[in-house]
Amino acid sequence: MYDQNLQTITLIAAEDITAYTAVTVNSSGLAAVAPLAGTSVAIVGVAQNDAAAGEAVTVAYAGVTKALASSVGITAGQIVRVGTVNGEMEDIGAATTVVKLGLALASAASGKYGAVLLGGSKPIS
Image (cartoon, rainbow, N blue to C red; front, side, top):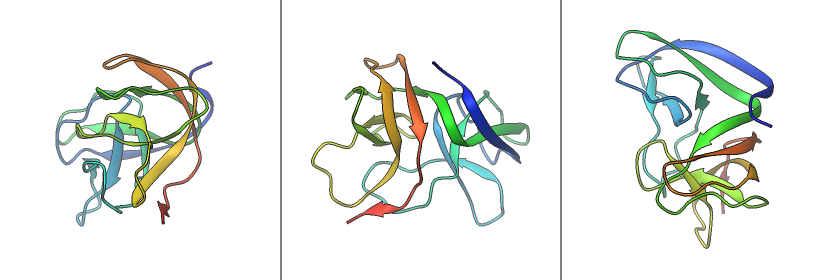
C-alpha cells in the first residue's frame, strides 16, 4: 500500500530530516522539518529518505506514502496533520487551524508507519 504513484521533488536539507516526516521549505529554499501542529505553514510533502543538513532529500508531494505516526497515532479514514513532534503525523482530531497533509489509508500507532494519501496542505478553517 505504501509508496504508490508518488510524485516527488529533490531538495537540499537545511537540517537533519528523518524519512517519512513532513517537510516545508525555509526562506533560503532549503527543506526543513515541518513545524509543530497548530501552525499554518505550507507543507511541501513527506521526506522519502533520511538526510543530514546539506544532503539531498526526496520529498513526495502527491500519491500514497509512508507516514511516521506521532504519539497520537494515525487512524485509517481520518485526515492527517503534522503532530506535536516535529514532522511526525497524527489524526487531525478537533483542531480547527492546522495544515492537513492528506487522508490516512492505514492506521499506525506511535512511532510506527501508516499510509497517507497526500492531498494538499491548505489550512482548515
